[in-house]
Image (tube, rainbow, N blue to C red; front, side):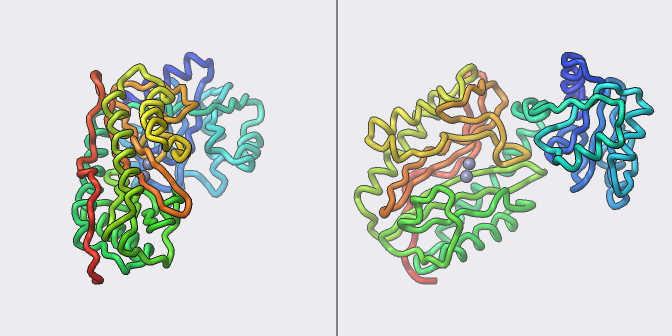
Length: 361
Ligand code: ZN
Ligand code: ZN
């Protein structure tokens, strides 16, 4: 599995004329090597795969990354890696600009005098966009955990509860349902606070007659899920009901139209056109979706300006939202796997507006 991933990266090394690459991004490191430790750097050349990590992770690295040469790094890992770079005869060395601080670059330059350092971006991220069978299986499990918690919402979400409490309960249940951890802090936005797309939960109590936007996900085998449902209590304003119906229609248009070969902008337009015709185009202020995998936000991007090309095996969210200041918001988000013909929806929870109990519990 990781062998194929390495082969893809080595093709890039050859094509770009570099002798090796240092991989420091945590998700990229895990993707290529299987190593899940919190610290370490990969050095990959045409013939060698080296995993440098410190004393804490040596044993774990050996178990998780069979076939890799594990090197114990000292307190300044660049020095140890520099020795290996020289030993392997690397003259041009790529490094991940997005995952290397200025300070780390300075240390690299000091320990690699004479080696040409080449900043590169997205080499591994690009490859990660298309999920292989093992990754798809993990993502399906993570989606199932999110779905399980959606199914439990009527049991534990009540009016009279503050957003913070609701978010904490969601996260607790994600763990109980098999999530290793949450994929991001749960968003719970009650009433008018639903107009903030990324609201942080507060002491604000959810009341009857209001909508509640819940956005959450779980991590399983390192892979994330991401789902949003908007629920109601009591008798919410008619306008919000209309908004909910429009958001569902927009998401359906995207689900039915998404297919390989479209750009992120073209998929975004499917939903945006629908909401614009419904009169809510201006209130849909963010992109339609994003890739999901080892990170909850990764490529490809679905937005009005995205030129990312969709391909089978990509997993993306479709999350149209309408935000009306003072009134509230509606967002509905599902994860889909891009297939040869179109897409398969991975999150299976019903999307229709659900009215939850208004009894205080
Ligand atoms: Zn989300
Ligand atoms: Zn999302």
